[in-house]
Image (cartoon, rainbow, N blue to C red; front, side, top):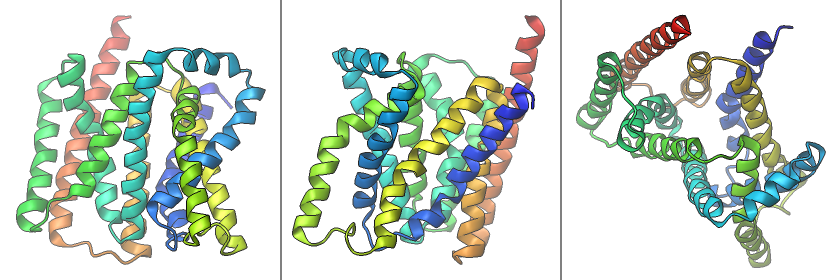
Length: 295
C-alpha cells in the first residue's frame, strides 16, 4: 500500500469512528455528559501514558510541562475541546444529533472567519460566498424553524477555537492532547470519586456500563491517532474533504436510526450548508492546485 493510500485509509477510519460515535454515547444515557467526559479524561490519560512511553515522547511531555506559557495555552485549548465534548455528548443523548451534525458541517466555515480575524489569513470571493450561504442556512433555521441552533453554533465555534489555538502553538497532536487531558485529570478524578461516594456515579452499576466508561479512553485516542497519521500523508484539501464523513454519519444515524425529525426547514438549512461546503472545497482545491503548480 502506498503512503498516500495508507493516509486515506487512516482518514476514513478516523472520520468513520467519529461519525459512528453517537452509537457509543447512546449506550451510556444513564450517565450525565459531564460524568462521561470525566471518565473520558481519566481513561485517556491512563491509555496514552504507556503509549507515549513506547513512542519515547516523555522528554517532550516534560518539556511542555516545564513551559508555563504552553501550559496556559493548552489549558485554554483543553477547556475549549472539553466544552465541545460535553455539548456533543449532551446533544447526542438528548435527541439533538441533527444539530450536532450541522455544527460539524459549519465548522470549516467558522475556521475561515477565525483565520481572518485572528491570523490575518486572506480568502477569495468564493470562500466568502460559502460563509454567506452558511450564514443564510443558520438564519433559515432561526426564522423558519423558530429556534436558534445553539448546539450547532456552540460546537462549531468551540471546535474552531480549539483548532485555531492548536494551530499557533508548537506542540504535536498526541502530546498536546495528553497534556490537555492531564491538566484536567485531577479535577475529573476527584469528581468521579465524589460521584461514587455520593452513590450517583454509574461506574459500579454493572459490567457493561463500567466497560463502556473505561473504553471511552480508546474512543478518544484511537481516532486521533488515525487522524494524525492521515494528516502527515495527505494534502490538507483531501483531509478537509474526507472530514465530512463525520457529520454525514451523524446525520444518517439521527434520521434513520434514532428517528429525529428531518423537516423541510432542515432540508433547506442543510442544503445551503452543503452548497457552501461544495464551493469552499472547490475553491480550496483550486487554490492548493495552483500553489502546487508554482512550486
